[in-house]
Amino acid sequence: MTARGRLAWLDITAVIAVVGALVFAMVSPRVESQGDSARMLFIHVPTIWLAYLAFAVTFVASIAFLVTRKLKWDLVAGSSAEIGVVFTTVAIIGGMIWGKATWNVYWTWDARLTLTAVMLFVYIGYLALRRAIPDPVARARRSSVLGILGLVQLIPVHFSVTWWRTLHQTNTFRPRDIQMDGPILAALLVSVAAFTLVYAALLRRRYQLAEMELEAHRAAAAAEGPVAGDAVSAPTIGST
Amino acid sequence: MRRYWKFLIPAFVILGILVVLLVNLSSNLVYFHTPTELNTEVTPSTERLRLGGQVVAGSVEEDRESLILTVTDGRESLLVQHDGVVPQLFAEGQGVIVEGVWDGTTFHSDTMLIRHDEQYRTEDNVIYDSDEHQLEES
Image (cartoon, rainbow over all chains, first blue to last red; front, side):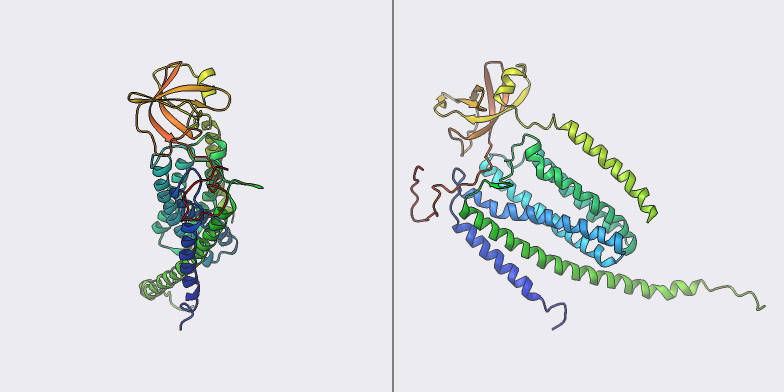
């Protein structure tokens, strides 16, 4: 077994954990006054949590790149942002399905929904920026700036429901005052833990792929190298 | 490292402008008005507004095509005449947001949204048993 395949247990554990968490979510007590549509909670909350986590990792890795100048940190930043974009999309789609069942609309332009959409597009922009720069070092330098600044918007996204009057409900998890009954909370925490494992597994795989992409890029550059070098031979001006 | 400041300083300036904009926008970011605001601050007009509050228990009645209800924010309440689809989760005591026109006495709405609160409570505060669907009043 190669070094890259050895940690497949993480992938397997993550899949088993998510299946287990979803079973737990289906047998957990019904939420009063909402019915079964409230079970979307067990997808919606963990996925947006992962989006926050993923973008926070991008932020930290971007700083780490600027400090250490090691390209591996840039690979972590890019990989994590990619996963964050996927989970933000899942959270929005799940929220829309729940919204239709509960609010009676899929989408509306309240502060929380609008800012979450803006966050998604900023990170899609971050990924587009990375794609636009072929040179790994230049890409790392430029995208790390956006990777750091991008995190700031998470504050208004998260507190939008407190700062402004929105259709979206306010935060259930307040310090020392959780507006959720024990059995539902237990199922939610299991789900959050399981999805976090999925994030770890995906990040590891995506990072390995990014490493391979970098190797391939370097190999291609090295193959071109001698040809480009041959064309410019140092001029010789006699010997003195 | 010094070249980065060329990048970072304008970026932080732009960010600062964004923050200022957001703070100023906050007065416009009100998704709905409360009954108190409509009664005291908002002058009746033909402008479309959103009104949000709780459905007063015992206030709901059906009048031909429309639904008559009273919406409250705990301080003041407002009479709403709703002609339109009534969402599944509509109930007395439920948070609702209605869209329509405020004429000074009645709010004429054609769109109703349910505003769910942030509480996730079990139906009877005990473990749910899928074989027993009856609800117990607690």
